[in-house]
Length: 432
Image (cartoon, rainbow, N blue to C red):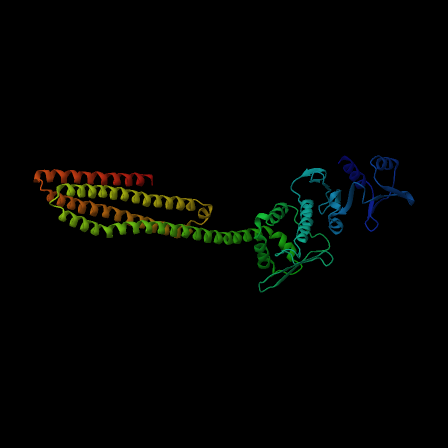
């Protein structure tokens, strides 16, 4: 940097002329000190007639421009890889760009407020990236339909009514902002084309038509750069809505499958209980008939009573297992619903949870109805079987006090079994 600083001091202290058509700076007088400095710093120069000295603008390690406008007319991507001196910018200040560290210096003092060189690099980077997105035969979707360096146009096509959108970029670098950096928005734009965002570029292309179609052809590219953040942001929002719709459809489909599975399981249990209820009158009738036929054979009648009592106990335990199955179905439905409820989608769109809450509520109602059916069947089975056993015992000719004792024992057993079932039910309710 000290070399460039000293060179600028020499140029400003002498009468100079920028001959940019010849790519040289002409000094009106040459001295031995100047020659020594040029030789020492390996600056390309030549001494011409009338004791004048000419320095090449394009040196091996750096390039000199007379002013801001001259730089914009001559700059290209390759130039930016060398150190650059803009001898006098619009405010008569010297700008120095050091590409090795990516820093800008104002009057050889580092400054972060001037984004001039950084934005020009981003400008060329954006053009190169758009060229990479040009139509390729092996791609189903292509962001840019046509890109021409010679004609300096970028063409986008769409199925929208506008059909075609043409952006022209100038031969020279446009006068970009110096204060606001474009780097972040360009990087954000490029990230939108990563593999994980496979369909996002389609939405960005659609927004280009919305933002740029009404702009004049020559002004569109600058508006494109200026509005790039807004274009990408709106495209991402639309893309998120698109993905959310897909996510919602998938969730609905998956949860409806769960609902159908739970409904089928509940129907199976209800079918078993219904079969048992239908069979109950037949079994009572058959047992009563058998008891009536054997009332004169106490031994055989006792066997029938014991067998019927064992059948009753088995039926009650079977009801308990069916109640357990119903509760397992309810727990599974709640777990599935809680998983869906905690998904990121419903954090963003809580209103969409309503449909899943309705499905879960219907499952709970079915579970409650089936549990009530099981309880009702329990009481029906207990009372009818108790009456039958009482009738059978009467056939044995026992005294009333023994009859009352046996009926009391049976009632206590019925209460015990019911409490066992109810306790199990309450325990599961507590888990919720």
